[in-house]
Amino acid sequence: MSIQFKTIKELSSMLQSKEVSNYELLQETFKLVKSYKHLNAFITLNEENALKKARNLDNNTSDLSLSGIPIAQKDLFVTKGLRTTCGSNMLSNFIPPYSATVIENLENAGCISIGKTNMDEFAMGSSNETSFYGNVNNPWGENLVPGGSSGGSAAVVAAGIVPAATGTDTGGSIRQPASLCGITGIKPTYGRISRWGMIAFASSLDQAGPMARTAEDCAILMNEMCSHDNKDTTSLDETIPDFTKDLDAPVKGLKIGIVKEFDLSKLDSNVVKVFEDSKKHYESLGVDFVEVSLPNINLSVPTYYVVAPAECSSNLSRFDGVKFGKRCDDPKDLEDLYIRSRSEGFGEEVKRRILIGSYVLSAGFYDAYYKKAQQVRRLIKNDFDNAFKHVDLIMSPTTRGTAFEAGSMSDPIQMYLEDLFTVPANLAGLPGISIPSGYLDSKPLGIQLIGNSLQESQLLNVAHNFQMTSDWHLRTPPTRSK
Amino acid sequence: MDKETVATISYLSRLAFDKQNEEKITRDLENIIKFVDQLDSIDTSDIEPLKSPLEKTAKTREDKISAQNRKEQFLKNAPDANDDYFLVPRVVE
Image 1: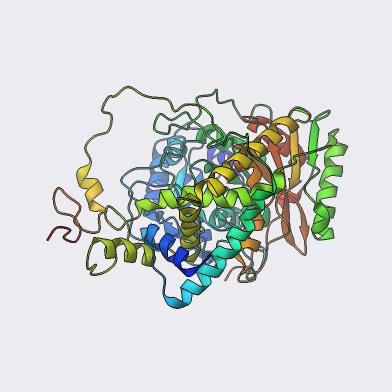
Image 2: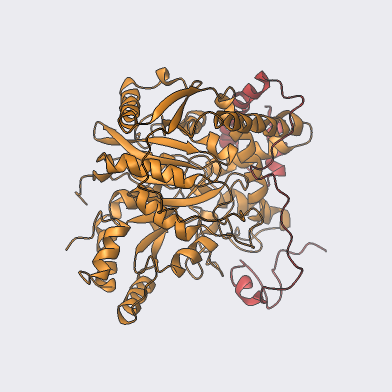
């Protein structure tokens, strides 16, 4: 019996038919965790508790929708009694006194949290190289980055250790690693999933979402993760549909927009070929492609690198060495305590972003940078609103290329441009999904679909149609383990 | 981006850098600011800033206490605390 690479749907049916017990499933899962230790994908494991929960489920059967399904949680969600570091030295000893709403929702649906996944420090990075706990390796190749910031989550799903993991996406942190690891990941509409208990990076952009092997599993997870939460004032009070209901609906006649301003000629011709092949595939399913113009979309990355650092510098001011988190040794006074605790607790990228944030928010620069960026953000959102008058969805590559080697991208701006195609959806608060669409030199690559506000069901339906008629999402990385 | 500006924003951020890192961070910040200066290429004079994709007023709730007192739990995560307070170095001589 192997549980590796199984989907939620498959594992649920194995559990129901008693082909495997809850306890055996979790035991096998932790065996896989150990054999893939070289991925460095976990920061903290929840083995004892998880096995206990599984044992209980064997004794008291449950009809919960996700009963007994092992899941990995990004270490950005606070988990009651289980260390939560956010990839930072600052929180290396932090044991949260409560759980994030998303974690509660998933566990109330029967999921078993097996551990906390590695990530870029405070979700600031696109390669998982900024984690205090070391790089995560992409299961698709030696020394390849998994993308980021949800790199650990993407790697454990790609390696088939768990069928699903939680992620968060501020500028592409679910979709970019999903693309580089050959899995499916969706960032819902801003406000769909509660941010209560998510350690804040940029509050007007942060959104949680599922990462799994298939769009169908993402839909199953969305059903449980989404909720209206009084504890989050930006949580949407909108009807939450059954995201699995329309998965099979035909896509014939659907109009998908291709963004005129995304200059694909700058990409590797093989990357463009994979994208063109995906278009052809959708055309064979009856989809029509039309060009749409989003005149300001190429200003998304510079806009993001004002808005996100500004919000980050404000959010991360809470880490002061007083109430929780790291404190420096022998502070000589309060000021020294603040400065040294923060300087020792944060890594280089986090400091860089705090400084940019302080700069663009400081007197004399606020209008020129922060206000300006918010105005451009409005123009970008207007561009999307106009585009969606003509098309149902927008499609682009998720990333500029496949996974790159660790250490190969040292210029921060080059790294920021990794999010070229993903950042616009965050600025406009729109849902976006990445699905595997091809391979180059045995490395996966994804396409991104962006939907109009609250249209996750349509995104999942269009992604599911692709997966029902292709096998890119079924490929698995070499199972060699160290 | 001169050294003085970097020193000011470092202090505003309560961060300190040694000499070597200070040079690197100054260079990085200069490049990043140059990169975001692209935003100047378009006119936004009459555009209302977009602060959040949800342009709704935050909902208020009834002013009723819902959380229990979990002082002990919260103080447990403090680097230094006594039974009632977070402790910091003396601020008044």
